[in-house]
Length: 121
Image (cartoon, rainbow, N blue to C red; front, side, top):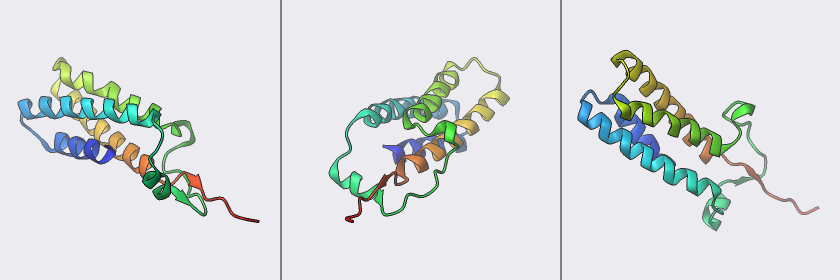
């Protein structure tokens, strides 16, 4: 689901067509909502294995953002502003870029291993 959000955000930042931008913003909002629900769900075994390593890497986000739910909420909060069509064009362009960068960062964080493999002593 994180990859789908990334794809929508990338298309959104590259699109110049207003109708397409609105459609992509709506799709991204829907995908972020689904992703938020998945953040609360238990991980399936295959994902647990992918996210488990012997030594944890340094987080790719600042300490204040080490909460997947919060990152998704930040991204989700930007989509209504883009869907409102009430912002000046330059503000819309900047918010779209911010949303894109946040979604990319969020996806990288969600795919980063965060479980440490237990060692038998």
